[in-house]
Image 1 (cartoon, one colour):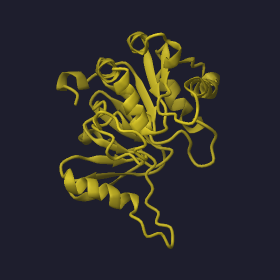
Image 2 (cartoon, rainbow, N blue to C red):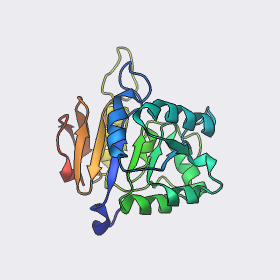
Image 3 (cartoon, one colour):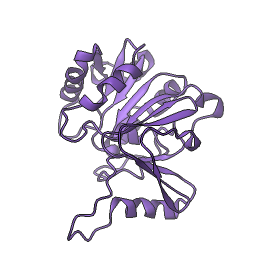
Length: 241
């Protein structure tokens, strides 16, 4: 959880997904990312959520996707010491994949505290999917399978709520499992006073200090205090900070 005096310096871009509809990789968010890191020279990418590709390949893919925006991304795997990467970064991006693997690796390298301190000090941070998930209080509302057990579910806590990226409220005919809304309602039932903001693909949250706005053309949903509350696209959501 951030301290009150630190929260004024937060600069976060939390994206639900790397794609929107049939768009190519990161296309829908390029201008958001470019604006977010407009003053950053050294942008470090953390590929730890990737499970079926190498860190180097993942970093190269992101670098290629954002190269035409004039953004140069350096993968954290290219540093001899990942803690030095966090210390030297002007900005950090964390990609999607498996939230449990991502959080476990951050714990392994002792990066949560250094990253949290840099974020609270005003360093711009962006993440999509798992990279957005870890900005919240915990990863308990991820959609991912727990293929590895991290030391704790506790995440960065640089925002005082949970996130659920890739939110969808469709119920396919003949499907008899719980919907996403039902699963988040279960979380809300045992965590009555903890808000979860569910983000549909192609949307995100832009957080600057104590202000927050919903990006994209689709509504989000806030699960809190026993209710699911629609959040209008483009709306200010400062009350959740």
